[in-house]
Length: 110
Image (cartoon, rainbow, N blue to C red; front, side):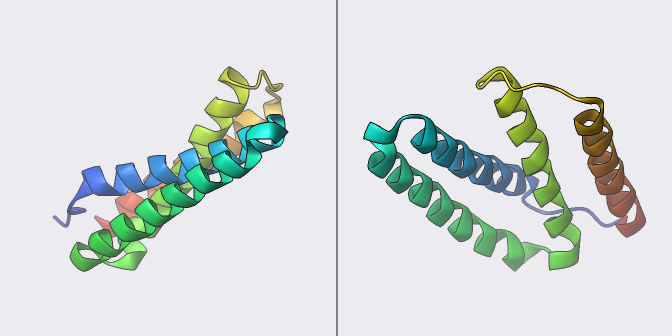
């Protein structure tokens, strides 16, 4: 059975990417802090790029890239919990489709 190596780094990369998007959103909400928040976002992007290079040393791209769809799940949670955005049935169905697709791709590759 094949497994993803350094899975903790894959999940850390997903988390860092979501934090970069979150920083950019906060930059739009707080214009006076926008430059600082954009620099923070850029830092998250650089850290994620570095981690991504390590991940690809140990894994095939086709096995780890689908995990990037988890960023959408985190962004949805941030939107609802931090920004009190509305949850719609379309949002929930879309998230379910993404998570199901990730599961099926992972299952196919194992």
